[in-house]
Length: 413
Image (cartoon, rainbow, N blue to C red):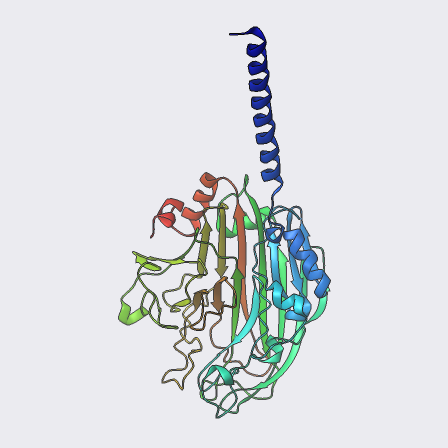
């Protein structure tokens, strides 16, 4: 072959290989720079700050954002500072609109305070005599649009309060005060809480103490209706997330069913599994369904594992020992209005008309019904923990707290 042709071909090959290598380097760089900012804590905190007043609690790389105007709910949190994963679901479209909507303003948030019951003859979401249909359902303003007042705060804790008067479906009047304190936990406090060291893992953990105080002159009685504290956490769904709930053993006739899945119609076996003393529930945000755990079955522990992002979320509440009376929130006049569940989980999905509020999934806890005399109070304490990092370390925590391995969670379906 002509030497000149050989040189030209060699030159072209070198240029081609060099160009291809350079192109790969550029693509890799571009891919590395492609980050979904809406999943970052700092982006979401700053977004919220543009639309409402916030209060941020910090402890090293752990942080959370509270909004006093929205009943001091924890909107989101992080285990790795501003660039870390943002754990709470946030309804950006509604917040950015600046509008108030009917029935409920679902701003989102990974921990918010509500009160029950929602339905039934002692409901605080339906007016007396109205039928239990969506058009008549209304979230009370003190749980929706009325702000909580900041009483005191430090870098890692904040105390809020609000005085409230309301009436239930049966016409019983309630006058009470709500106080809510949120506190970030240190590494030592987390270790004491779950009885296992979390060194080597990134985490954010916080305690909320939610108190209701009877400020009326009358004793609250079952015959005329009782209230309960109801905590709801809204999180970002994914096909990679499975909710896990350990339950107590026992005769169904004595302690109730292992799981109640009749809220919005029975849930199919490919979405809900009962294996021994564990409940597994898909949290993909693609099919609307809700489950409940009766009080004598509930251990006070729930969790979810995101295998894609290596995030283990734990929710722990202090169960009131021996208490069986939990308010029933079903939308009907009830034969037993104190047969409600202690723990709940909800997976969002499209409605019949195709619309959808989220998607998100929820982990929920409730206090027993508050049969309080004047001046008495009831507290409901819960802990929210997000742990992120090495799967081997996360597996140790899952085995210790939830009683199952990450492999068992991942192979549940």
